[in-house]
Amino acid sequence: MTAPNKVCKRNYISRVLAKIINKRYVNNILEIGSGKSSTTEIRKILQNKKKGFCISLEHDKFYRDYVISKVPDDQFGKVVFSGLIYDDKKGLRYDYKMEGGKYDFIYIDAPGLALIQKGNKMVSAKPDCLKYIARPDVCLQSAKRGGCRMFIFDYILPVMHDDTIVLVDSSKSAVLYYYQKHHKGYNFYCLGSNEQDTKGTNKIQRLLKPEYVKDIKIIPTKATIIVNRKSFVANRLAKSLKDDKILEIK
Image (tube, rainbow, N blue to C red; front, side, top):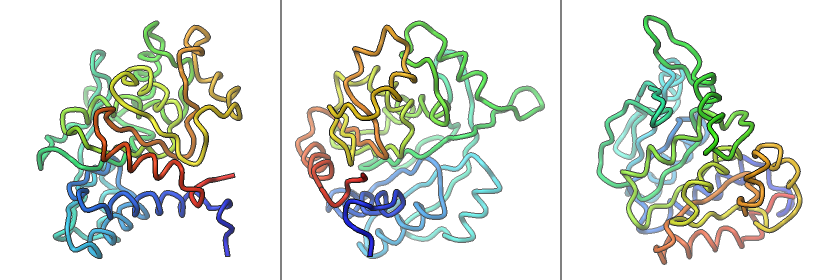
């Protein structure tokens, strides 16, 4: 039996998903990046709850088909293909026209290695993302897997309401950028860790430009919840997850 303080990442994320989605007011869900594990888990939670619907966006057609073969579309959710586009002002975006109004819960776990259309070719979006990071108003000096994900919070803002709960799976560099841009309006809860903990500081500093190190007050961990500062219900849920000792990863 796994000890409470030795929870593996997948079990950890699964527990967080269940605790959020099982809340009565969480019914309209958007998953950024489908996954055999996460999409299956979200669908099962909704099926047991007998209420709710999840749209899972996937930018890889082959993987979209694979996930659908494991998790067929039903009354509780569907997997939707959406290509990616990039421009110098807004960065990387899905071309999906959002449906379903505002979302109660948004789970961000993509894009990772993103391909975009340029002319007649599909090319990696990473060079464009790195070019964007080089701008002086961006706090990052390095972005590994989270580089393509750093634009997603701005992408989902139009479909968030005051009580929307956003869960970001890992993506430390993206979370640092979200914090830089949005910490005045949103609270950031790093799950499984004390936000003031000095462990991992050096690793985080390597992701930041020196002039921004003192401005970033969090140390992202395995998962981060972002909620509107004004929302009582969303902050209460986020705090309960942050303080849940069973979810701690040592």
